[in-house]
Length: 333
Image 1 (tube, rainbow, N blue to C red):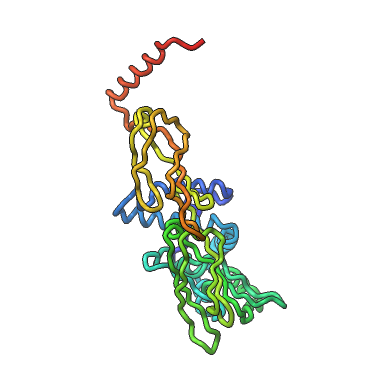
Image 2 (cartoon, helix red, strand yellow; image 1 turned 120 degrees about the vertical axis):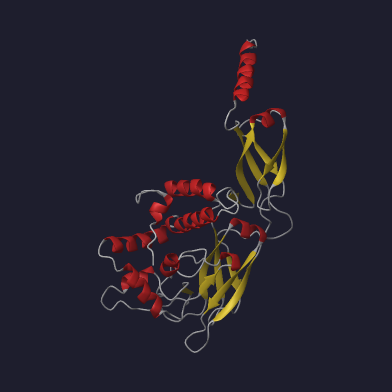
């Protein structure tokens, strides 16, 4: 199994802070996003690697656990054998979240072995404290904490059986826009078979919201906390989305139409005459659906003026003429 160097994939130093990690992700994600490279399998593969790296390094808990395994690899190795032994032991007190059919195989074998099933979220919470309700967390039968603990003498402790089952599922912003489903494999305990349950995630769901499936845990309920992955183009603010759009200078000056991206697909947007760089235009109803009630948020598009690329000799002539005209104008006193 190939070891994934997520720092190298994002082209950052191991001491990089969260801001640098997010900046590197957004830059690479824009470059290799499937919408920008339709039909390009190499770009698609690269985009998946970039996304996977950000899922780990962009989360402080995952990053800390990954760094521990990275230290193991650099000081004696043995990481792959630990993963194999952890996967073989299993634990029927956890569950696995699978993506929709189009998401299957989205993460590498390394990610699955280290962090859990396809599209899984955080690491298993480990043993429950005494007197707790018995909520179980996890996505496969082991996690990084288990692996590191098993290196220590007598370190094979397992969580106690629980009632409710809880975990985190990651979706894309597009899935939050249109709604989606996830198949959850919930273990029934030692005497019962694992059950697969399809959980519906409604349009308009927000980051951090919990979805409850009553009676679908082991002896209680199933809870899924939704995490929405960062998007290379859009930033969500409640039910609105924000983005920047390059607009040719002549369209901004004279007015016209351009094609603007939205979560529902590209639309034609009108640019008023004399639109300045940085002006924000609103596409009403093009944001996320309201989770409760009718309607949807808006899309806020910040205009960024764009010159022709490359500039032709004729382009330069016209710009020079414009400069002469403006310099010849009398200044206002």
